[in-house]
Length: 85
Image 1 (tube, rainbow, N blue to C red):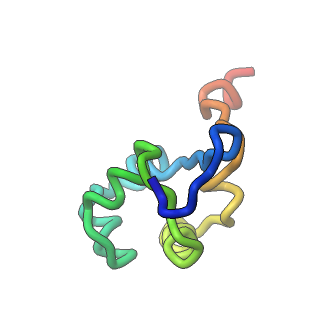
Image 2 (cartoon, helix red, strand yellow):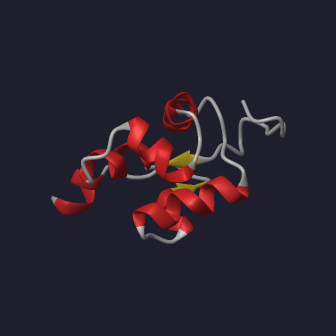
């Protein structure tokens, strides 16, 4: 977990894995782009670690998306649910 303690009601959810796969990127490729270790990307995708603000902004820059499209306090709805309503 992040060094900042958060209660169970304040998780940070993300779409890093989905966005990475959509763009054909490996964890290692994304890690190189944001200058971190590939294990860091894996930990972020699993929710074992939360990004710093700087890292979150670098990830969003790589994907060309605003922060709220990549990170959220509430779970993201599966994209298939949004598409097939």
